Length: 506
Ligand code: FDA
Image (cartoon, rainbow, N blue to C red):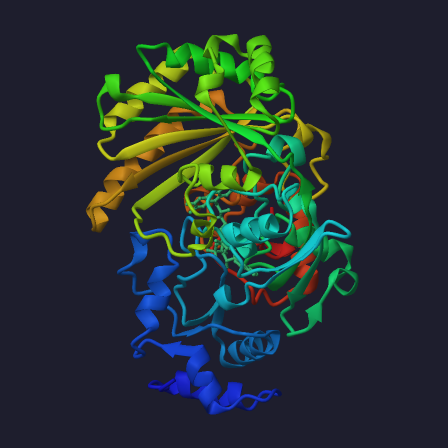
């Protein structure tokens, strides 16, 4: 690590003077400055959204620690020298907040802190934050055919950010959020102290499970999670329909039943434009059923006969193969694909989200399709049904409040391949228009949003607006601010949408 600027030199001096058996050589492998040949590779490879590849808001140093004392030292030295910290686990933050900052900062890349210890005797696991969902699913499946974990669909998402914002996937109706299954954690606080659940206390433990723990309260080193039971055989299907084939009617009906189906059955809808012509708009009904096809077909005939599901549309596989399937792979592909941390093909994207409490009228859905075909890049809506277990958990159990009464979550997304600010602005303008169109059909007062689909248009701390916090956390936002004020009164762990101090709330 060739320290080339005075601030880097001071940081190195400070780090080397910290307790621990660190030599300069050691730090040379764990620290990358912008002059290092590996710097860009490490910075860019885990950066999921290439929108900011040319950004100037890059880290002064990238640190890839192998143990907690390095993180403790980095917190101490950053505070001493007036630097910021950004923590990156999987790098999937929608607005790049794990690797971008307007003031000089150190990026702590947790990708090497990714060990996973499964304990089948009490059906739990300790997972370091730098592990990905794919690594966790793979490790569970290597040890048990009847256990799984209810989290997101994309294997390269990091556990650090994912659980910090809630985390839901194909088992959300049966088991709730990833954050609902956390029973202990290790966190390093602003003073460099290492806490487990008992030492951090129930308030802070509550806050980090879905309350924007990422970037607000400290560095989460590891989560202790409860594994959940899955049957040895599950069933998946994906039924594609076009507007001509009645996609609008099917989605309309889906809204009335998807949240009420048996909790073993999860059917989401993905509607997309496929190139800007009305006849190309498709809706896919994409499903995981926790059981065999012989149980699924009668359930579907009873609750959603309009979809016309037949056994030949279904694939039976193991739960881990279903994880591969939802990640876009085929039955029979090697499970090791789940271990790929780096997504080879990436497009720039912008996303927004809503929660729907009343079915959207068919005429409004038809308006959405018109909007979709105005966009020439790939534009899509992903609708994830809730109900089931989500209805049983109270709004204040963890900071994620969007429980009973929410039929489904919509994620709007636009993805493009052109570079440049002009292209970004054009596509973002389009998604803002779509989001405005939807205002009267979705939750209101506040118009709620999902923290893990981070959207800086909702407001930022810089502009001193906290409205975004009520959208993500509703009534839990104030409690989060109280806890923040107690554990980090100088607001060291901060970013554009970190939990603010209580004094800045209205
Ligand atoms: P990243 O490393 O970028 O961190 C995100 C935030 O958490 C940053 O603010 C970061 O500083 C902070 N942070 C990360 N690790 C931390 C730690 N150990 N301690 C403290 N702070 C930490 N969501 C979902 O619910 N279901 C899904 O199916 C999907 N699918 C999906 C697919 C794709 C392609 C993307 C890009 C994203 C998703 N997501 C998702 C959203 C995802 O859950 C969200 O972006 C997570 O925050 C990503 O966590 P990472 O650790 O990868 O991000």
